[in-house]
Image (cartoon, rainbow, N blue to C red):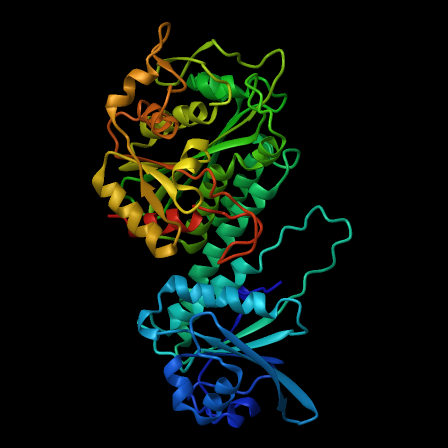
Length: 503
């Protein structure tokens, strides 16, 4: 596995050159000789035609330097009894190279070199003049390498020590690159944390162990509070308590605050159902219930975001609330037809015990608004199958009546390519949530994703609010882009970008 971030070497400008660079007459002023056994050289189509040696070998191998295309070979390296692996990595049109596309280049490099004998890599992007700047280019490449190299092997009994590849980044902008790399390293860590938590089985992560993981953020200067059963009862958070009542592992409300400024905070609220049986509305499809270890991916995304912001010492005030519970069956479990009372006093008729995520979120949303007076609230949750039917895994479903918030989240999602699609949220659907015996039903009768969002909106009184439904986004079936098979950590990059750029 590649280890970048804190241990990546940032190499300053020099006038000396590698044997391979000399061979191809590459005279970039910031290339220096290293002991690296692999040279990754970023090239654009224009640079191929400008360099006769590169042009000749590229024509022979039909290499066009299109974005993400690679060409690899072994070249003699002084002393000439040794060889150096050379990987040409195409950037495509550099004028159109974005931060996300740069991160994809890193992912391509990681996957191309995976399984090779490479142990030390020298990455040279000095020939590339991209609008994002060299510091951003190199940091995003390292981000892509980190994310594409992620593995979860905790439970493999025969696991071998992970191979550490030293990455040397060549730059003439040493200070700027180091600063940006430190920021992006924190983001990589946040995504990895969310992936780790979501990949954990139900007997590895449950409300108490998730809370213990959150307490680790105190080391970064964050304030962490955990409400246990007694504290939840005292706060009147009856919806979380109802969902978690059937489990021997009681619920928790985990609160992490990073106060990097004195302005009013933004609140991030995550659904944390560490395992969802469906309750007495039992999930009967084997493949569906097997995936329910990931029903806490929203809470994992919030914790990963909080880790990122705290590690970056970001100048923002953010509070993350993670509503943690197991939805189990027992003699204590809540039943279809029960009426429960949420923290804001609203009574809820339980139509379906498998619509539990919105219940824990309802209490967390109320608690966030009441206790922190945030200037905006965004919740994130693997909430409804109907969202998957609407936009699949291509987008997260975005529900909000606040146009400014919609614009901000859409722009943030577009930048990091965790894209969102606005779906309807309208009071005309409220009759679907009308109960004969209580204030609300916990399910609608037709528009599943929208009525779920509308249900949540009833627990936010005066604050700009958005709901992100990431059902279908939390898991990946394979390795593609920045994702690896299993948990994606979806939402960490989106929420971090939004928090750092929202006005």
